Length: 512
Image (cartoon, rainbow, N blue to C red; front, top):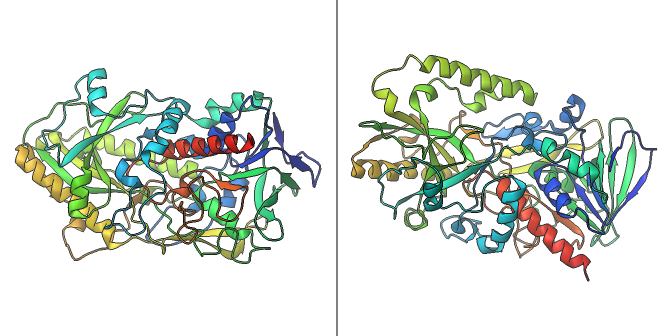
């Protein structure tokens, strides 16, 4: 069932058993998990089914610190969320990502990968992927010509990826609309959360839209699935009863914002061609491919973060501009056009490249960001059209981030030399070991994580291991906002698995 909240009578009261705020990957996955149950599910989406400039403007905000994309164009604000233009890269986090690492401050999850494995398997199906198997040996038997580089497997391993083409807005719209117990309300922007007097239970959510309508949503349980920045923004803005914001009694809401650093870091020059499909990827064609990763044992020995290196033909990559440069328009559609235009120009120029460069590659890093409390989302005095304070992002990196990127390529360089297949040349920004800064050309992955991090101790996190906001019995957070650490893979597979785990927990609580 679907209703446009702009068409409802003003001050309509909407009631259900569970209210999910946000119809992106996390929210839609959870709603579908409740399909055909006896419970009434309220699914709120701030936008409609198509891009709407006035709705997108609600995401605008300021950025400081390390150069970042315009906040307005870093997310899509309509049904399906940012899956509307994602690349579909999927891989689970590694076991080490969940562990407390003494060389990574503020690391460690209160759950393990084993706790997520059953839900990773379910998430694979939601994302229309292949089997929940990310082992090189499996895919080597399934696909042709996956010959790996001859590296020491105790030092470097091949982390496998699968690729989804799931655009949730297209894929699941019909199913959501036809589900008898799922009630989707579009143009219903959550702007305030009201609790009981002692702030231990949510009573209702206030929603607004630019048609001037205000509505109230009541439910037994509320799940925030608005995205990492917007989840923090809504909690901080809900400050009429808790002046510092809901869930923020320990000043943690908005802190530990994390991104994946995606940056061209080195060049690999092979002495001769190395024919393999293992490290290449073509959208819509490739089922699985690999990136080079450092083993957990070497990570611990070298005290580095977890990251991967991907290969791109240098003949093309040398002509591509950093995405941080081409994605600077506030309109995400125009930024996407700018990126594709640059890629097309680079491909044309590469056609004339001949000689040794034909077996040379740019090595691109994808690495977790060290959890940093100073990297954070806040709200300011400026308000949007609905009267809600805008979000501001301060993105701050640490020396551990730079050290880890540099060390990964020093390790890979030794392996390439030992194998006798070529040489690695570090990019200029990595050569001075006393320089901890990153250039403005450093890309983020548009992967927002960590602002309502998970911890059993309320002094260390905003939500507990079941994604419940500490101290508020019926308020939960779904998605990558809950990540204590971010790992190397794109977050969609894991945030879907984590959301399905939360869904399972809530189903069990409803039974009692």
